[in-house]
Image (cartoon, rainbow, N blue to C red):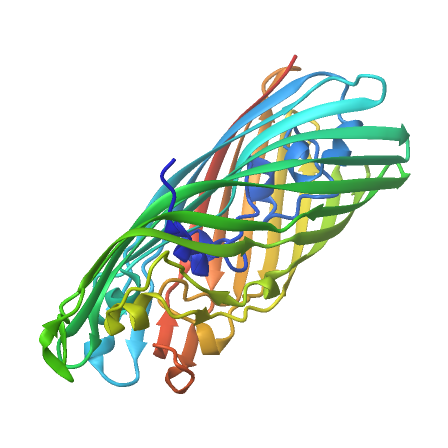
Length: 424
């Protein structure tokens, strides 16, 4: 199977393009989670509990259920204004993506329940066409899919545990081109590929009363060891110290890189008031600090000093662990309609010293709302919208080996999710 460096995009992954959470996480995978800004761990009344908190499958009505959702994601253009002059300025491309997800839960069997989900828990896409940003990130695209069979066990009416196996598939593409050494020495790269990796997830829920849920979930780190093909070229064909001796100006061959899909620990509490209004508060920590550098490897030396300097030297990242806080409200109108809303605060993991054009991430505020309608006892439909506002960020990391001395503005993402759930 062809594999490759799409992972460079993980310098990346963090975002879906610009990320929908810190780094390249995408917490929102269903109508409920989009409507509630990802505050969806303690109170999970749908088949999507199999992904967000498998322990909660124990509390679902004893029927098989399935849910299919589709999310449209719009990434705004990011404006970059450089302090050195307009020749360095640029605007990233605005982009649109379609993300389908699927969830299924079995009926109870001797206190066990089984589930399965197909989701896209992380991703990135960023494209720049202006000369200076394009030199480092003409295209960084990373798609991450997760196939997650799960199981829950209910010890009693107050305590349940769950867990599962994470099958992770990664597909991506990395391109860049531009002047890397004045006045006119260029470097170009074109990489693409995929890989499979595995991890696990664990969950537990305690119900002190029928109206309260206390939940804890953990998704393991998955090291994405991507191997694939790279096309690297430069117009430097001879060294000034040896003008009559040609050197290789092109590399076409294997390459590899390893980047973490970070572990996530979430703790949440929910409480239902008057049998209609459910409030949930969630805190989660994403362990980005395992991402220390981006180091592409090759089976042979690139020889050419331009190619080595541009594409072979390790790139420091030194990301930080991040905290997120999320609050959601769910109101059952008792007439087949359910209203939902959410708010979230996401920290970004990237220190100013390593911010780059492939992922100009910043702290974010999330706002969301949605509605579900129960068509009959078996079928329900829903729709939800989330707006992810990224704060402007000014960076100067030239003295630390970076490429940025300016301000990133206007970054945002919009999600529109529709879904259909069926019980049988």
